[in-house]
Amino acid sequence: MDAAKLLERQRTYFRSGATKSVEFRIHQLQTLKKLLSEHEEEFFNAVYADFKKPELETYATELGILHNEISYTIRHLKKWAKPKRLKGTWINFPSSNYTIAQPYGTVLVIAPWNYPIQLALLPLVGAIAAGNTVVVKPSELTPQASSVLHRLMSKWFKEEFIAVVEGGVETNQALLAEDFDHIFFTGSSRVGKIVMEAAAKNLTPVTLELGGKSPCIVDDSADLKTSAKRIAWGKFLNAGQTCVAPDYVMVKASVQDKFLEYLKEAIRSFYGVNAKLSPDYPRIINEDHFVRLASYLSDGEVFYGGKTDKMEYYIEPTILTDIEEHTAVMEEEIFGPILPVITFDDIGEAIDLINSKPKPLALYVFTTEKETEDRVIEKCSFGGGAINDVVAHLGNHHLPFGGVGQSGMGAYHGKKSFDTFSHHKGVMKKPLWLDVPFRYAPYKGKLKWIKKILK
Ligand code: NAD
Image 1 (cartoon, helix red, strand yellow):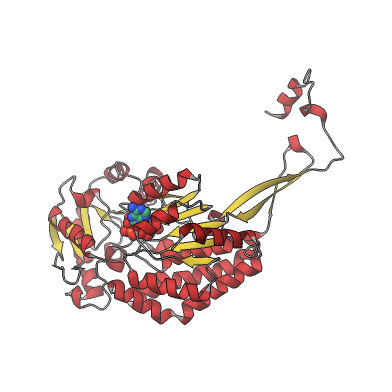
Image 2 (cartoon, rainbow, N blue to C red; image 1 turned 45 degrees about the horizontal axis):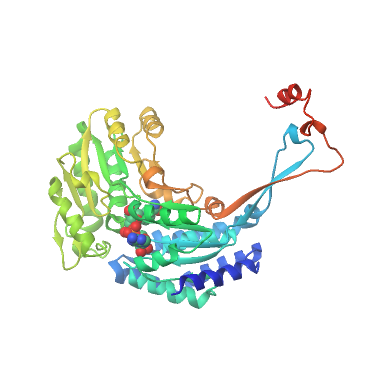
């Protein structure tokens, strides 16, 4: 791949104005939707081949989310793309004022491996809707999914409009050296810094969708059985390889035993006593991640699970208790099926622990007490989250999705995606028939009038 040549072709295409009309954008989104429907089986098979992800999860967390986002965007795009009239101010009377959304131009989307289809194509939906051309670089860690994406997208779309480029770190480096108009990166905070540094050389704006340790609080007012079930679902979905999975649980000490029993019950009800035999439980993506995750197992007492099989990159859904302070499992993003459960006596302690760590991408609190809910939401800074649920908030395209601090910058989904990939230009229009003389020199005697207006 010649990154410079590809970008030049996309830039020429963008400058031709081909992507500008709303009709064109809607047509491309319809094409993308059709591609997803017609090749559903190929996507299912590719993601299964990469890490044994079950069909239902591939549909619910990848293709289905994409269909939903595309339909919603198609329905609202005409309205979003219209200029927005805004108020004028006295100082500029008379004037009419508006913002107009314009595409940035050529956009680079870099995706991770854990939801290989969704995280490559969901930003693309927003980028197309806003009228950009796009280069998408999926992850090299899911070679089957990336290859299907490359093959199908190049068949259905012109490369000068949308190009899927396969490759690893060197490919990213080659792309990042080019002068894109916007970079949308999803991945680790470590690589996020590399992307931002590269973007800074060209003053390219970035959206960074990063990771981190998303905490989950369970207090004694919550329905423990339902809470445990929802937490186990969100944690072990995709074998824990989800950016917004609850990373660790803080449970009120007085209900810990009951909560742990319910967690165990929930895991068994999902995957049976031997999750290795379950058709619904995926594998760890590769050996490096398997080794990293297996090393966490000795950071606490295994309350449930703990079995591993290196040949299959299998790690059983695992609950850890009695965790030593400052162990890797409590310091690093887990990103796998290991759930540390620690306790608190007072909600203030839980809040302090969260605030002592980098700002998380998500935060969850299970409680029926409004005061506890308000305290946690107000006192902790986090990307987004849910009360009495986990992960599900990202399925609502009305909510912006993104991190804060170390977990990212910028947001997308629904209208927010359109805004993220657009520059909102502010324009003032004035008539020439009235020309108030205050602004012009000589200024003598005018300051007191200016002060009266600008106060
Ligand atoms: P990663 O940062 O290792 O890789 C992401 C992308 O960056 C890949 O396409 C990869 O090829 C590229 N890359 C890797 N090293 C690079 C380098 N040195 N220079 C340039 N590019 C490089 O992330 P990952 O392992 O694929 O994904 C897991 C991480 O992503 C976790 O931290 C997770 O929390 C985060 N994540 C965040 C979200 C979100 O929406 N906020 C979603 C999914 C995953």
